Length: 315
Image 1 (tube, one colour):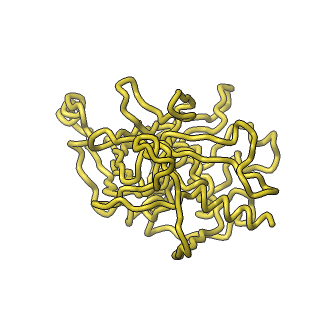
Image 2 (cartoon, one colour):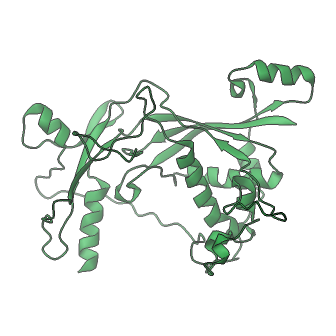
Image 3 (spheres, helix red, strand yellow):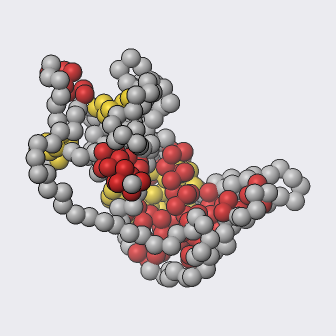
């Protein structure tokens, strides 16, 4: 028996909005904070992203479909015993006599910033009328939201309770996806927010085979700091897997990944407005800048690019 924990660093590649569902006089959508005012990423948000990704990946690794992907709506509401539900808990838990529902075997903790409290920013947006291509005139199309800047780092910690070898293998698969850069958390990810990198990933064990080890574990306020790192865990678990053609045509199951990159060259003056900076400096408009290392560089927001692409596609 052993205590098993995964630690890592979540580093934002773009601005991040982890919403609280509330606004104030400054912005329509505030970042989620704890009672001390510290921004954080709820463990439920991280676990939800993990489960969603694994639900799409597991069928391509030879596992059965989760009931949430079933074509029959009635079947989606029944108890499920797939590999994903074995790790994250039954998607439709039941208290019936013959039910085999179990709680999650993985505990995902809230992720807090590693360094000093990051300075938040305000991003604004406006709805565009599809016909005219100009700003829509409805009163609700002008909006803004609070974001944390690119580069902010969060401490990730997950604990495993009585996992099987298959549980660890599936978890390693999706963490490998995150390490490859396919990780988004929070709101407005389709508009360019919430892209993260997974860094410093470590899988650790704390043996609990003797009374002395159990006592040492119980006395430690941070047992994950005392646990022993298992080198090569991710490579070992993922190296034994190979994708299959199973369920490839089922909606919701992963089929592939496409990434398009390029360089945009402006042919004239360009402005992406930062309303917070313009309001503080007294200018009508100010360029939106992001901290990249020791430099601040101008940013083209994903929302702006997405809007242009959608407008052209609709034509």
